[in-house]
Amino acid sequence: MIKILVINPGSTSTKVAVYEEETCRFTESVDHDQESLAPFPTIYDQYEMRAGVVREVLKRHGFQMADFTAVAGRGGLLPGARTGAYLVTQPLLDTLRHRPQNSHHVSNIGAALAWDLARPQGLPAYIYDPVTADEMEPVVRITGLKEIERRSQGHILNMRAAAIKKAREFGRDYRDLTSIVAHLGGGITLSLHHGGRIIDMISDDEGPFSPERSGGLPGFQLLALATDGRYDYETLFRKISRQAGLMSHFGTNDARAVIKMMEDGDQRAALVLEAMCLNVAKNIAKLAVVVCGRVDHIILTGGLSASALFRDWITERVSFLAPVSAIPGENEMEALALGVLRVLRGQETARAYQG
Image (cartoon, rainbow, N blue to C red; front, side, top):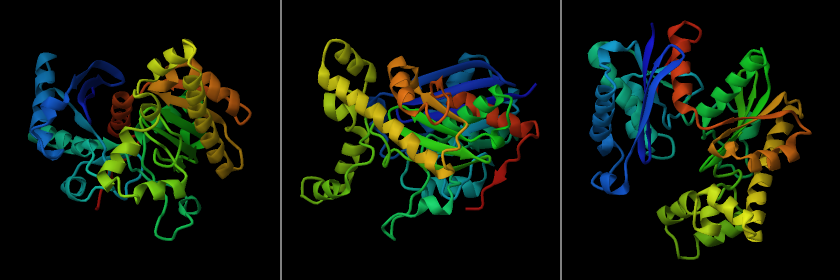
C-alpha cells in the first residue's frame, strides 16, 4: 500500500499528515507563536526546529520514515515552474533557498524538509503545484508598462485540486472542463482553468481585497502614498499585505467577527463585506472574458467559502456566467497527497527542475 508523508510549513504553523492511498490516517497542525519564531533571523534558520516538529509528530502517531513510499512537501516560490509534480533535486533546493521568485516565503523550505527526511531511506521527495506555477497565456501577461509583466502567484495548489475534484464529480476530465476558481482566504486569488492549464490568474496584489490584503489599489493614489516619505518598502509592503482589507477597516482579519458586527446592525460592516464579495465577482467576470464567457463552472474554495453569506452574495452576481458551487477549506494536505499519489500510480509524470 502506498503511504505518503505530507509536510506543509506555514507562516505560523507546521502541518503534517500521513495518507494511505486516498485515505488520511491523520493530520496535525503544530502552531508556532511569534515568541517561538523570534530567535530565527531568517526563514531557513527555522529549518531544524520545523524538522524536529515533523519527527516528533510522526513518533507520537507511531510512524517511522521506513513506513513511507514517498514524501510530499509544499512547493514554494519556484521561478519558471509549471503545475504538477516536481521531483526534489539539488538544483530545485538551491533555487528555492537562494533565488526564489519575489521573496523568501516559508513555503520555500517545504521541499528541503521533504528531501532531508526522505533521503536517508532512499525515498523520493516531491513538491506539487508550487505557489508560482505559471502557465499563463502570453496575451494576458502584458501591462501598460513595459517593465512590468503579470505573473502567476497564488493558491495554485488548492485551486487546481478543486478544479480537478469538481471535474471528476461531473464525470469529466479536468482537461476538458473550463473552470474559474476563487480561493477566499486571508488573501484572495482567482484562476482560469482551460485545456488542462491555468491560462490566467489574478494574484492577491491585483485582485479583490481580503481579510488582510489590500488587493488592487488605484495606481496614482498608491504612488502618492509610497512617495510621501512616511513609508519605506518593507513598511508599506506589510501595510498592504498584512494590515489591509478587513484589518484596515475594522482592526481584525476575522471575517466572522465582521459578520457579527453586521448582524448587530453595523451598516459600515455590511457595506465593506458586500464590497469584498462584489470585488470577487468582478474579478470572476474579468477572467470569463479571456475565454469569451464560455465557462463550464465557477468554484469557490478557501476558508471564507464556508460562509453562506459570502457564497450567496458572490453567486447572485456571477451565476449568469455559469453554475457556482463551493469546496470550502484550504485542502492543501489532501491536494499534495493526491497529486503525489497520481505520480506514484503512473497517472502523472514528475518533472525534473533545471533551474
